[in-house]
Image (cartoon, rainbow over all chains, first blue to last red; front, top):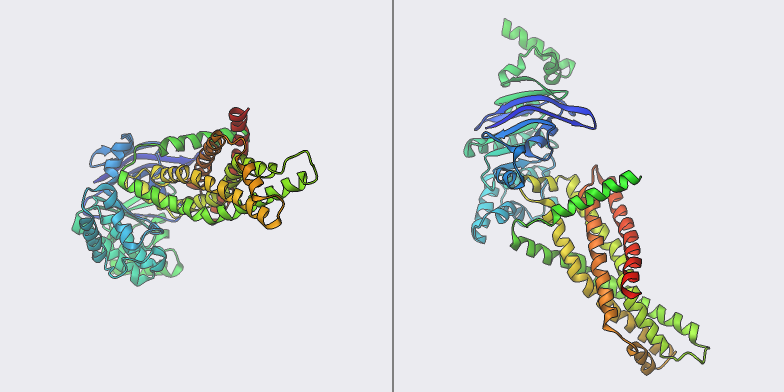
Length: 256
Length: 249
């Protein structure tokens, strides 16, 4: 479980996150949604330690991450996996080497054990026969899947996914969503997905937090989100006139 | 501007403290040093040899053109001047400036691209000290391999001078080699190697600093690359003066 308590973050005097309080549950897909520039990615970066918050705490199973020294943080980071928006695979390494990398770095396992684990992870994300290709030689969807394989190689307890569907076609997006869902159940991870893709939210969202201008203004599940009366959330979920009409009809349907 | 200079200098030294921390996995670091020796050093051998042969040839020609008519200056001076110029200045300093351009831009653009594509963030989240993992092998590789490149440059430069001597018949091979051997002190080579080690450190750390902290996109990566070459060249020239003043005078 991850708890964010009273978190504030500002850049050059501009407050980007204001008093964020969220609990992310184990074994669930916890989604953070919001418009571009609302502070979702900054929140994630504060949670994984890429940014130091101005105030507040990020507790991993009760341990305050930001109060730890480098070694302490390192121990918690070994339990994290992260899927970046642009995959962030290492260009100079092949697909297999990318997945083997954290295992080589942090385990005492033998070479063939590391290789077997990496191949298992690649197979788990349905990548076969691409081991010796470089990231630039495979498609965007495959890169995402390789990045997921790398993220789960160390059997993490916490999985962060920053806009996992960005740049992917709807069909591949659904594949990635389902993969994240299956792996969350399989490894019983605390999964946090940052997205503004409503298809993903409806497909796999279990616990959803809406961030608006740096504040967490709504929490709920995917059923609540469709019938919420929070204006900012409705503007996000139903951005066009057509979608607003859909919402109105949905309301009629529910009432009638 | 002064404030910016001190801020950047502070960040540079803070980065160095992060670079020189205990590595997570010595085996992987060793392998990375070997890889970097190949990328930064061995792959520069061709350009170093090519430049050195022409530098040696030009120094020989220029010396010859200046003393040719003077009966008071012995002909072996041509070999002596070529040797001294190559060992004391051309090989360590000019080759380091060339490497600042070639290797410096490679390092800055590699790290800059890794930064903007979040590969450095990925390393950090895995619990890896990204500065140490990425930069330390580059520093060690350069400090190890560049002195070899410079010593090779000295030989090739002197050889280039000899080729001119043979080709033009300005002096005899005997006079040229005699000049190359006169008043030779191994301290000159030590001085050149010492300078090269310092310059290698400057090139890799400044280029790494510029690349590591890139913020933005491809435009900023290009700018970082340019800054890496410019700043390291300036620092090399200033340090060249300081080291020479201390060691030779």
